[in-house]
Image (cartoon, rainbow over all chains, first blue to last red):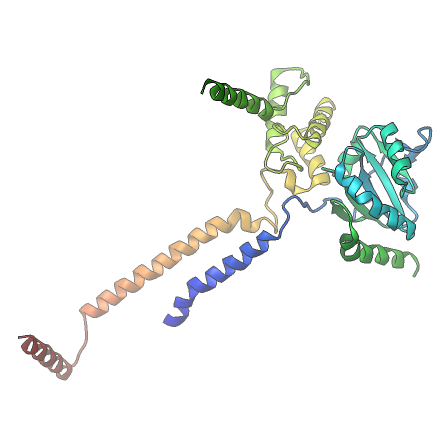
Length: 179
Length: 160
């Protein structure tokens, strides 16, 4: 009994060590999204490619897709763009939300660096961004065929992120559609 | 030296400018302004995590101030505005987190640790007291007492 009590400080220390060690690898800028398993917020915004056309949340439904929040003022978006192009080539459906951006600059960007987006919503005021809980671009939402948000990734998508975090979830959503 | 001082002064004045975000909103009375100030100070900026929405100059904080101002104009209550933000950004935006299963440790952890400390101290004190009491009323048999005295005597003799 006495011996066991002598071990107590060691146990407390080990507990703390494990706890703090884990803390070293947590990213405090990664916030859990409050919107997981909720439908896309309602919006009615112009299409970036054709400003006459109005897009709503219903236009994004039908197929599982990535919804990528991007802007030309965001350097990380540029870093991620080639990856999005590759994914689009592989047949992944990617919709864009052009967040608080200049429409002309955004169109120029898409013609310069290729356009991976199926649809591109023009959110000049950032109102849709606020409704999506966006706090910095790029952010990518994974939505299912019913337009329900199933996952959110903050930061640039690269090979590793796609392979480990997004591809399995995207595949699962595709499997949901064809039973 | 003078240059250094000037530089420092300039630096300080600039940093104070950077701390207070400039608002250009107009309120119908001072009470509304106070309410806006108070509410935005209680909400945390999602991007710059250790600043509140009132102080931050991050674009997202500006957007959120604008949204909050819009909701003020619509006559929404503080609770409704907070709910709006929590629905989008989660409990993270609250500097005053609600009590839930996730925050139980946060709210009661310190009190629990204090309780544990008091309990440990209590046990130690209680043990010592009991130990002291039992030592005072040592119940050696007559035989043992004689042996003890003998041993002590021997030791005393040895020392001499």
